[in-house]
Every structure is written in structure tokens, then in C-alpha cells.
Image (cartoon, rainbow, N blue to C red):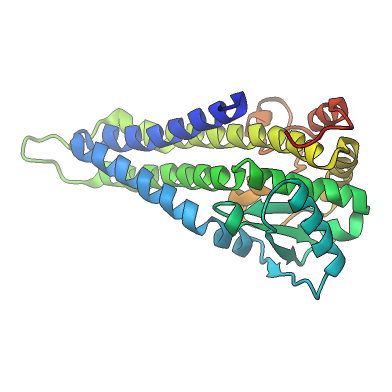
Length: 289
């Protein structure tokens, strides 16, 4: 059965796909726009599903980390993967001192976990266990696929708005002296659709972070260690920002950029304080359900 978080995520993804169809149909003004929107939605969803791991790893210049390079880390990930009832993911290292991590891949059999050199140097072994368990939780909960699809759909909406609005402004009039599109669609495509898509994408990200924290607590049975790790990541992350494509930031375990007031709508993650409070409320003896 779907949990509330899974139901919410599915609904938000559906809304993102619907925005593509609505934006395309509103501008073109006939069934061709509907078909174009449906096709774009299907193509982008499939592409993000199949290539999500390559895109995310390339965005942060992640390099393969072999067992001979880091035997203890491989043993740690293997142990946690077994506790999470998952295949061993591929390991990658990101050559930066900014402490962060992410998981990617279209399914558990094609998954990868990437850790920065900074996070390996910063955290204790038990705190690193919490972080790795969090990333394995994303794989277990299928969040790596969800985030990839959400990001690609949101990007497609923005691209569609720019391209089709340009066409709507400059395309020649048809024989019946109508441009085929609705002038109000230009406003939808240029402003409202991209803004709505961004908010929906960020809503998905925040929902899945809470769920991954909870699953990680069940995997390790030590939620306080993950809470301590998150506090360290926020403190040091503000001092050493994570470079990379901002569009990929929702996949990271921590994005500590401060936001207040209306800017909180655009947070890629819940506040660290909220995550820590929830983790401390979990049972220390939690086990995989």
C-alpha cells in the first residue's frame, strides 16, 4: 500500500506532467498541443529514468571508488546495504572538501552512492553510517528515480515556456488570422508554469528527505548519529559551499543555504532543525519494517 508520502509524491509528479500538457495545449490552442505535451512528458520521464545516474555523477565530477581504494568504506556500505536489504551500490568519490553526499540510479540494481572527500574527512564512522544509510534509504524508497523525473519534468516546463512563447510571439498568423495560441498562455508559460514546476519539485524533495531520514534511522537504529551528522554538514557546508549545477542540489543530503520568509518556499530541503527534531523523536531501537 502507498504511504502518505508516496501518495503525495505521486500526486506532485502527476501535477508536473499535467503542467507540461496544459502549457503546450494552452499555447498551441488545439489537439496538437495536447499531443505534443503528452509526448514531451513521456520522453522526458523515460530519459530521466534511464540516464539519471550518469547525469548526476557527471554534474559533480564524481569518480569511481574501488574496494582497493577504500576497503573499510566498502565494508561499511556492504554492511548497511545488507541491513537495508539492498544490493551493494557502486561507490563514487567527489573531489571537494565540501561535505555532502547523494544517491542516484534508476533502480536498486543500477544504484550509486557518491560521497565527497570532505564528508569522509569530517564525520565519525557512526555519523558516516547515518549518512550512508540515508542515501541507501533514497534507493530503497525509489527516491533517486523520483527526483530525477521531477527535475527533468520541471526543466522541460521551463524550456517549453521559453521556446513556445517565442514561437507564439513571432509565428505568422494562420489563414483564419488567428495565431493558434492564446495570449494568456504566454504568461502561463513564461511565469506561472515554471514557478509552479519549481515549487512542486522542491515540495517533492522536502517530502522525500523526511522519509529518507526516517528509513535511515530504522536501518541503523541510531537516529541521533544522523542528526549529529546533519548539524556538522550544515555548519561546515556554509563555510565550504558545494559547487555544481544548482538544478541537481535536491539530490544532495544537505543544502544548507539559509532561507527566510517567502524564500523558504524555494528550499530544496527541510530545515536542519526540523530534521534533527524528527530524528531525535525516533526510537533508538528502530529496525527495518
